[in-house]
Image (cartoon, rainbow, N blue to C red; front, top):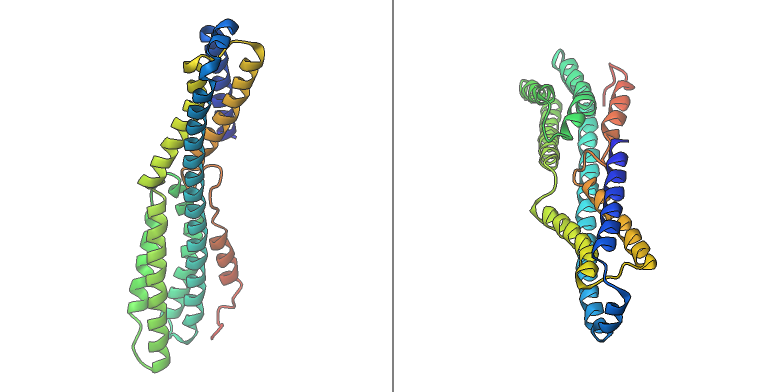
Length: 262
């Protein structure tokens, strides 16, 4: 809701400023007719400015789409690794088995309930980190015999390494756009501003149809820029990724009988 109000304020402010600029600095119709011989060159330059805006916007949208897709894919892979590690515990001896299972159930809960909201601010949750470290330590205490336990121990350690790597990637993504994404965002905003400023600089008239045209253009461009600003972070804003993978795996693990073996 707050993002919608912010976008509305940006759109309205852009339209008001554009209308005021057209009325204050618009040229007369007679001056426009005198400059008709320059129409082709002005049209070409306007097309160049529009083209640069469209290119920057396209690249930015691709970057954002890929970042959000990667965040969703990583979350699904991390949840799958948690589930696989849990099923490996069936052959483990007590009391380690219950402790490891408890930590495996607790970890996705913490990710969904505590760490995910913190990702919007680019930070990690300390309790989630502590749980993952405890899980690693607990698995390392398992005996290396018999072969079934040894195999399960190695498999769970592999899954923990995978979980750790995927979580690290998630925390890196929580930092927001990389330099390329930021550059394309700046290019998009500059291009949008250029598409409004350029006609005013070359002598846009203050006739009603021109003012309406510029106002509509400013509203559309302001909305696009507000939308782009709302997509700078994969864990907040318009297209934020939800922790559905972790809530789903939590429900799955809690539905497994306590004494379930492989």
